[in-house]
Image (spheres, rainbow, N blue to C red):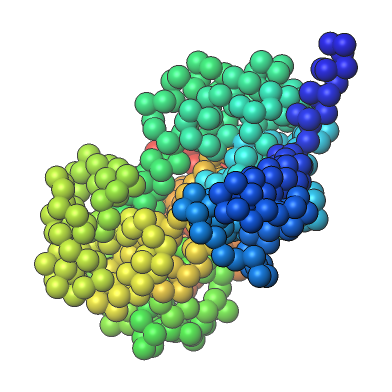
Amino acid sequence: MRRRNAGRWGLVSGLRRSTLRLFVLLAGLPVALVVLGVLYMLGMTYLEGSPRDFWSSLGWASETLTTTGYGADSRWQHPLMTLFVIAVQLMGVFLVFLLFPVYVLPYFEEHFEARLSRALPPMEGRILFHRFGRSVESLIEELRRVGAPFVILEQDLDLARRLHDRGYPVVVGKLEEDAGLLKGVERAKALVTDADDHDDSTFIMMAREQGFTGPVYALAENPLHRTPMLKVGATAVYTPTHVLAAALAAHASPRIRPQVDGLNLLDERIGLTEYRVHPDSPLAGRTLGEIHLRERLGVNLIGQWHGGTFAPARGPETRIAPGAILVVIGPLENLAGVDALAASISASGPIVVAGYGTVGHKVVEMLRDAGETTVVIDEQPRPGVDVVGNVLEQATLDQARVSQARTVVLALSNDSAGVFATAVIRDYAPRIRLVARVNRAPNVARLYQAGADFALSMGQVAGQLLAYHLLGQSALSVEQRLSCIRVTPGRLVGTHPWKAGVRERSGAAVVAVERAGKVLIELAADFRLRADDIVVICGSGASLDQFMLAFQAAPSASAPSR
């Protein structure tokens, strides 16, 4: 008997919620019709003195509940009978509005739309993401691009359907309702959880209890929760909002991250300056072979920042993009000549931060710790805000002295507002450096189109944090660092370093040569490198590696000349 009852209960509990509700409705409607029909029959007999048979009374109940109206039977004299009829009419109206959205539509949605899995697939080699959010969006796209298997565990049914429509492998379910939802997780390659901190901790503990011994990476909202998450089983815990703030601050201040590493290797007579190419500049749209910067002004173009990407100057065919930021290195007296061709970006002035939420507050904290002067704009008067106002209004920009700023950091919480603010500020102060925070990675391109120099999303920084652990490589690159290094000449011995195709073959640039304790920055036409010379080259990490490989050079072991 107990087994039979248990089997019946198991069958009922196994029904989907919408199906169970529909069964209850189908069973309850006939009962309600009979009860209301009998009550009407009794009321008409004893209150109205006009008896009705059972079938007539049942028809009245059906007409009333379905709100289809009455025939001739529509007059009642007794107050109790009138109140009863009114109550049943209201019940019918309520039932009509309740019937389709609560009972019928969920049933058809769950049974005729694409079925979502409610159990994990075989997890060998797969990465399991607990909850989908903007912090993991870029990483998931990268995993799909490289063909790395993964699955998303999502409890929001509507979001799960949208993810399924986008082609993502999705499992839907709630851990607190289905303890067996993580069955098989012990064979997964790695776990990433991006829920709120409480759910993150629950997921980590349940995965460990299930027998998972691999790495678990958690994205926390509150940095104070990092230690507790580590104690319950997380391998590493990151706070993407703070990492995003650090990246924004690093782009804004050379005190946090120098423009180019290794500048101290160069002679004091050599400087590095950034210039913005206005669309009307004589440089815009032209190639290096047409403008002859080195021949005319004695400076080297290392490359250009455009759309957040650094493109090394690879020889005469390199074309300068309108709106790009040029990185130029050369003798200090020669750099001044570039001002006639492009607008130099100020290296002085305050850093203006627009938006004083979680990210903006952390950006300001990091900048002030680095000794930078900041001006904070926010619409709400709160401690730490210097200018209360809308960043889209010129009066606010005037009050914050944006035109005199070195850099503006947009840390707004809305991407649409960020795009428009970028366009407004770029028009108001075209020469400043503009760094913008983005919430969703797909909007990064819109920020660049509006005029941002650098735009960073939560997904980018979180993806960069996790890509190395999950893919074994830096699959998502947010930072492109420039460096100057001292190397041996290698295969450049016997050649003129500016005529040996260094740019074309590597993208790096030779900016100086050390010979007999002297730094040479201007080389005669008949100059030739010797084996005991030291060559100073500048470029991105990739271009420096390519130079070392192409010319068989090696880092110099000798101390730099001063």
